[in-house]
Image (cartoon, rainbow, N blue to C red; front, side):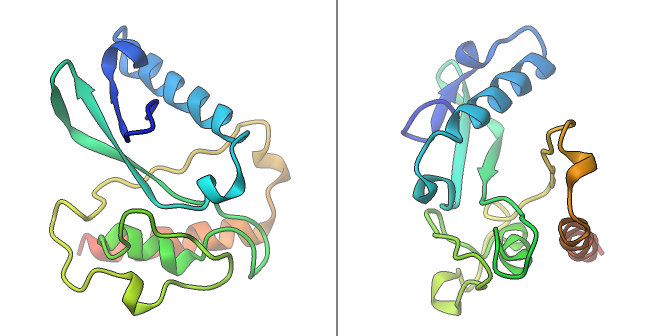
Length: 148
């Protein structure tokens, strides 16, 4: 998650524990807030490497949720990400769900998301709008249906 090629080494993330690796990733995410909005609105996959080989998981980064119907990532697009439908580099358009031509017709298991994680700053949770929680519930419900 640290390189522009979409790949990084565990040495760069810190090998002490998964928590320290996650902390490095979160710190990188905070630094990425300085990037132009275009960079933050693209669907990106980050491959994590251990020496010379890829680890058996990836991080998929998306535009975040925001309050309001035309703000942040559309919840339907996040569900499409979970299903593996959105293509790498998809540009999120706040309030507008991706069109069929922007989607894969038959995603493989590799394209699909098998674990959904929300990252929320602890000092911001109390300030979050009910609309964001509504969007999160919708996404969680759709994610649960995928496992049935």
